[in-house]
Length: 113
Picture 1 (spheres, rainbow, N blue to C red):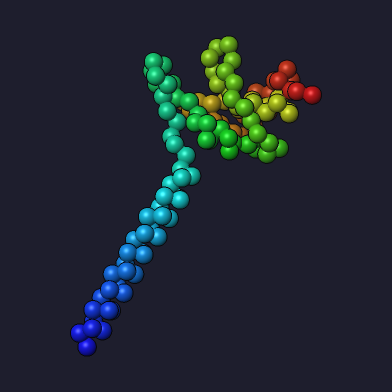
Picture 2 (cartoon, rainbow, N blue to C red):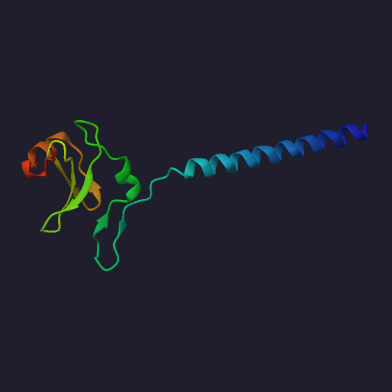
């Protein structure tokens, strides 16, 4: 009887170890896709930038294509869709990706043919 209890305790201990191992592995897999918050550039005060990971997954809400980040002569950042000329403003590191904003800020000179 004592042998069975020891075996049962060993099986429970191994099972607990497996559960902990799988939980840690799942946590690491889930956190691999966390998008870091926008960070401040050193020496630029409170100006924040869009992280490259976020920029790589952003898409134009109209045609679902990729956008690129540009800075105009006044220092304002825009997300630009070169296929239709829509510009979406970036305010404090937060892109304003609304179709109305893109239409309002459309720039024909940005369209690539």
